[in-house]
Length: 128
Image (cartoon, rainbow, N blue to C red; front, side):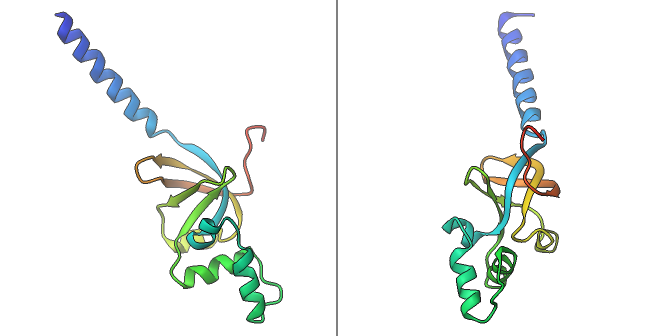
């Protein structure tokens, strides 16, 4: 094989390998939030607004669902304060609205979207 062909072959192998590596599942930890509150970094203002409307026991779940009714989208607000878009329908995400969760899936870095494979309750840490 000529040197140029060897280089081209090696380059093609590397590209195929790097593409496959991007498709590996990852685990993301955070809270399933609405996009509005995620931009603010908390549910505080939404919960206060719900309390003024008479929901004295309002919490993050109530806030997330109220914001969804107003047009927000579900996102994952990660433990590192990074907001990831989620690629599945609202009915599935509604189960976890306002809850801490670990999300298993692949990340599309171009759109910052997690392609969901599974969601589990609670935060995940490397230790457990």
